[in-house]
Image (cartoon, rainbow, N blue to C red; front, side, top):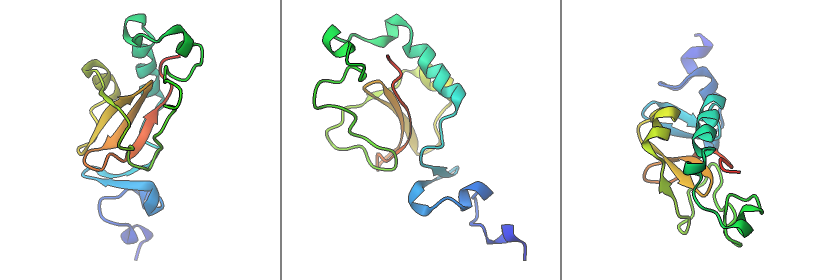
Length: 136
C-alpha cells in the first residue's frame, strides 16, 4: 500500500502531518492555524489601511503608544487557535478589503479587531490566522 493511502480523505499531504490541535476542519479541507494569510494579502491590507482616510481616528496620546490605538488594559486579548473572548469587540472588514484578500473559505469570515484582521471560524469564533498591526 502506498503511503498516500493512509492520509485522511480530503486532506493534502502537508495537512495530514499537522497536529490535530493546530488545524480546524472546513468544507474546503483543513485550515492550519497561523498558515492562511500570504504575504500578498498582508501587502493588500496594509495598502488599504495605510491610506489616511481608512486609518480611522486615534487620539494623539494613544497613537504614540503604537499599539493599534487600544486604550490601556485593552491590549490584544485574542490568540491564534483559540476562540475570541466574549468581551472582544470586532467589526466587519470592508468589502473592498475582502475582495483583495480573497473570499474566505466556507464557514469562515474576516473580522477587524483594533488594527488587526482575523480569519475566524463562524460559530466557534476560533482565530485561524491574523494580519496584525495594519495601522501604524
